[in-house]
Length: 462
View 1 (tube, rainbow, N blue to C red):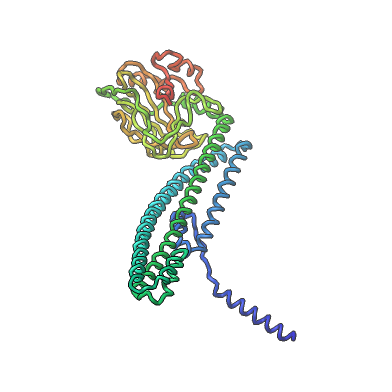
View 2 (tube, rainbow, N blue to C red):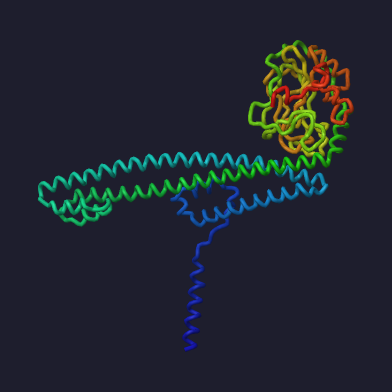
């Protein structure tokens, strides 16, 4: 008996081992590179059924990705309250957060596109279902008319009552098909009816599946938007903490910039430049938010300009007719809080412009590497593109830093001569963050007596 049991056990084990040899083996798929593709496959019922195992694995990948996002937010939040003091490590984290925010913009846009595609497919299916229902109704009417006709000719009222006493369409079909008094033509009609009805049910299943897919994509899009907003908030909070902790470093950088002389050669003759009207134009056209205001950072420390944040590569436009008097174009697109490239301004365009017969100095700073579109000595027109937004120099995220200096009613040539014969610095001699006379040189303190430093946020009402 023991030998028989042992033999059965061995045979069973062999059978199990053999069967496992023929189990399907699923290759590892890198879903991170093909999210759009698997969204399309797994949001349509037919392709979902054909790729169920892979779609199930994709669903798990999305869950894991969300868990990783939650973990990342938690880490950033914890790090805010325990800054290490190593400025370069902190800057690296902020740079990674900025890049992640920009990557999320692409992902969110992809979800929006997928939703649009699915909604179009749903509309097409609804039209298909509506057309199929019309065909079914016509065929049902044909079958009923046929029954009325044969009732008058064959005297089979009992059978007609039997058919029309059915509780639903399927019951009608079964009764009709069971009656040998119905001829082949009507049987074909009933068969076509059944096929149309079956296909109608399939279409309804498809549209229900796709509607659920739309809801799922929209929920995932909302998750990404919420994650992005939290990431921005934590990154901004960390910037505030860093600025407070490294305030002395920022002041030292500003002091160094105050003393730094621009390497320029004389522009011999600027030539006539007509004033533009309608005030100074706004640097960006749309899609921005105010990330820093004059005269101080939210976390402490002087901030003498207006920060307008958007994506890297956002076009920047000349505020009025004028001339470019200095540029810098060699700093990396992504700088850091401790960067002194371009005197901490990174890549910049320094202009003297004329609006409504008044002359102004204007600087756009932290531009993209290679993003300066104009050259020193070049005349510019109001609304002309002069550069592309970046995050160069002392910066923790893509934005343009704008400063405005009121120079009075003198000509652009006179304003340039005064600048060239003076300190030739970015602040037009009005003092930087560490200057003792900077506050008294603000236009709101001096009463718009030139030269003075203007408040760009107040001027543009942002």
